[in-house]
Length: 175
Ligand SMILES: CC(C)(COP(=O)(O)OP(=O)(O)OC[C@H]1O[C@@H](n2cnc3c(N)ncnc32)[C@H](O)[C@@H]1OP(=O)(O)O)[C@@H](O)C(=O)NCCC(=O)NCCS
Image 1 (cartoon, rainbow, N blue to C red):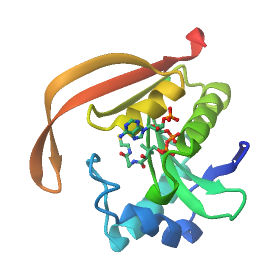
Image 2: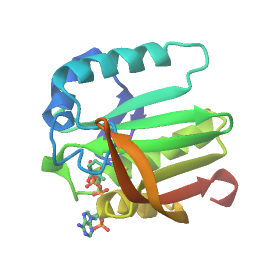
Image 3: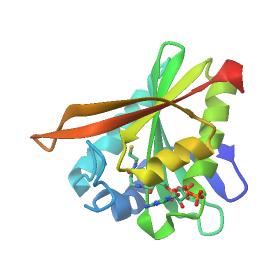
Image 4: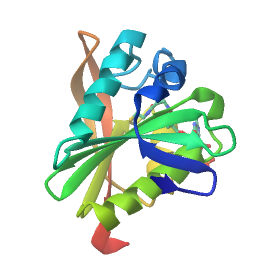
């Protein structure tokens, strides 16, 4: 468990299901994401899969939820996918709480925890260049822009989409 000024950050749990459905099923929230929004059933499976991946001896996929200290409500989740000494981080949160600094507060803490406790040396994050809120979180967490790749292709809900992909990075040795 990680504690920040306003948040408790902890591994995802089945009890978080309804709070995650509140934002995870929302079309606007997932607009710039490949794997969101999800149906309620997909969210149930997602939580089950992430709990089981974190129960492995050396997990390669951590999924954290951020919970408001004040109300105990889960308002977002953060993934950390480990590839050797590097990791990829990603996030989504409830739009009722956007632009209050919550995701930056949580991501800063997850990055620090990964550097301090998970033998991670480098963390990357990606998003479409249209996703201003997301790359602002990267910048507010001291991540540096590495690249902008034009016309990347991905499959979103069985449909091919084209987007300009921003990649940001933070290196443990440089902080
Ligand atoms: C991206 C997301 C997690 C940010 O969460 P958040 O709690 O609002 O993040 P923060 O408040 O810490 O920071 C957001 C920053 O973006 C800025 N921002 C957001 N939308 C903006 C816009 N359209 N134009 C300019 N700045 C914008 C905010 O002002 C804030 O910056 P500031 O503190 O310097 O003012 C949230 O918007 C979200 O869940 N989006 C949908 C899911 C998603 O796209 N995830 C990322 C996929 S790669």
